[in-house]
Length: 292
Image 1: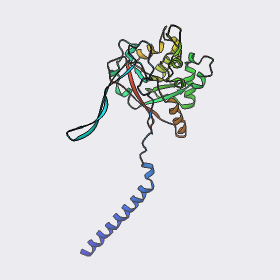
Image 2: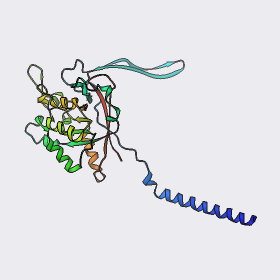
Image 3: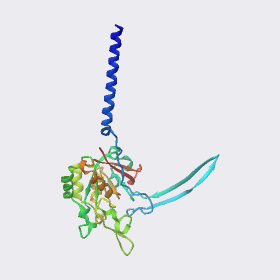
Image 4: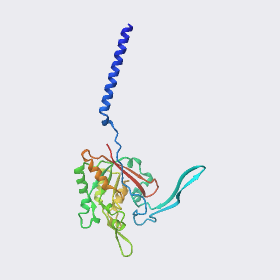
């Protein structure tokens, strides 16, 4: 009886050894399939500094005050560096988010926008640069529904509940304020001239794709020369609780990276991270990556 028990135990041990060996071979041969690849995050934000461009009408542009410029000190035997700054700036300058409240009295303020509309949201880039600079007056370009339809014919439908980014190529003029914003008049005032979206395109994106946000690489969602009369896109998006991202940076690089992985299609997602304030807008960090 003892002999049978010993044989049975040895058989079980042998089976276990073989099983563990085969499992190790299987895992090592297929480890690449389970390997986690950290995504490359692309920063779509300009650095906040004196070169930032602000929309007209802001009381402040950007002012950095070095309260403590920085110094090395030794205190109680410990050596360390210390610096402390203050800064002041308007809401609508640099890469920033316009809250719905900007053009909707009952709309969300910046701090009230639901996180699920800003964190890891699907996104799409509508690239119209070639159309913009094919015009004799590129600063008068407006994104139309036909441009969106052309994008979808190539890339598939825009996900519902997504953020749309429009690449006009206008960022090539940043930070030259006169070229980026428009023409300076003799009296020093600036006429606003830059590409944007048409009212029809805004209506279509709202009704057909139920977007939660829209961004552009210019100073405003609306075409510059419409601003003084009727900022229709701001009004439409604001009334539908859609936030707007202006002065988006690095879209050129983002498109280049997306094209590099076109064989497996970039499932683009964004993190939209504005300052948490009860205002009409504010400076924001925008991060993009290809998910999955």
